[in-house]
Length: 489
Ligand SMILES: NC(=O)C1=CN([C@@H]2O[C@H](COP(=O)(O)OP(=O)(O)OC[C@H]3O[C@@H](n4cnc5c(N)ncnc54)[C@H](O)[C@@H]3O)[C@@H](O)[C@H]2O)[C@@H](O)CC1
Ligand SMILES: Nc1ncnc2c1ncn2[C@@H]1O[C@H](COP(=O)(O)OP(=O)(O)O)[C@@H](O)[C@H]1O
Ligand SMILES: [K+]
Image (cartoon, rainbow, N blue to C red; front, side, top):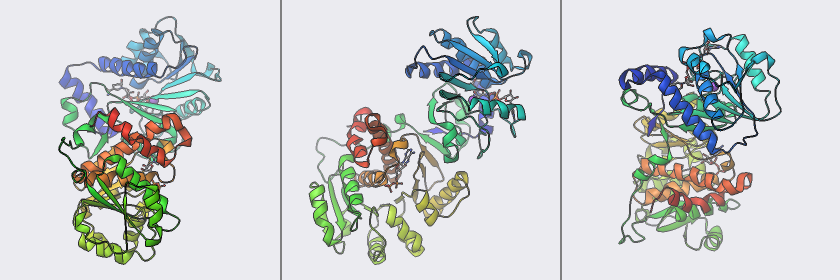
């Protein structure tokens, strides 16, 4: 997994990397710009769309100038919007690229920019070199860039966004942010979602010795990390190897949550799924998921199960005794979600009974009730880290970039998923997936990482054809494609 570095560390990395690799900063700029252009070409933006590039005086602007030159090689008509005073104020690498601009590129003074109605705006005004509060002239530029109605693509970070803290005020509102090597921490904070748009991280050769030497407790979970986290099964595997799991949840009017959870566990690979619910509700489970078994009343013989997921749609009335009894009897890691978490929040004496390395999956509301209130997401992540370490639990804080806090203090930021997954029942699907992996004997950390990643990826696959029509069942229907795309048997 790639480490996520702070803005200060990024500076340190640049300097160290150039020293150790023998590369020049100009070579690195060319590499980043080429990676950007490859991504740009993959999007198949119309060649008819004019491309305006807002260029600042630092190396972020330098990237913009190199991108301009490269894009003309692919027949795009490119305009430079000069957001710097004069060429002698450019950083040396930016100046080099300014002097290499082909004649076909028109360079416009920013004040003369006649805001077009459409096309593409590449924002290479300010990157991670932003220091302190924006100067008044920069604020004006950002406000005007934000009047543009076409597609806005920010290079490295949306201009005006600070790298390590919560930013407010004037920041470019991008449709896409194309960052290099690893995401800067501020790009994954929900407070910044309206500025970052869709986050794309492109690999450039910045991840050598210098990068290895820098410490961070934040990691970024991506496609290529996933196959190694999976267990393999052989041809003698039988349904017992694939895990016997119990899902406790549902209540009158909320049986859908348990049903989605059971279906998703089965699609993830569970061998044997039993749903535990109130007596009166068992027929709906048996009808909706014939592959699952039903149980009600007391939980007989809990030791039979390899893992257990508790909470989706369960309600909180008259549940404490059953939960307490169960936690006293069951010693293997489990998954707790939704009303299971609400019960823990109301009965903190139960928390020490939760088996070590269990996976708790709150959304922000449940997190606030269980762990505490935070004034911003950075503070919330710090609370999450402490909670996971102090209780020796794995805390999955759900959201646009779900963050998995591990008992050893590492915090893993998920890269998969999209806004179309913000739909009722999508969390229940995740609970089924993580419980399924636990039941298959995955280490709890790997179960949480695989569950979160595959869930987001299934959402992405489903949304290709569904967009805002996506419902939680579509996520379940796309779980098989995640195995196919990641080549997992
Ligand atoms: N890691 C690297 O070495 C690479 C860095 N690259 C690019 O370089 C960027 C960083 O470049 P720099 O360090 O030159 O910094 P930037 O270009 O991000 O910022 C420096 C510019 O911002 C202006 N500025 C700073 N604070 C300001 C404020 N408060 N109000 C108004 N203007 C302000 C400065 O006057 C200067 O023009 C990255 O974001 C990335 O785009 C890429 O070339 C790829 C490789
Ligand atoms: N904007 C988003 N981008 C990516 N994933 C999202 C987004 N919004 C929600 N999700 C994911 O969808 C799921 C929603 O879970 P939850 O809030 O528990 O919903 P529910 O209670 O309806 O099941 C989480 O896994 C979350 O990470
Ligand atoms: K930028």
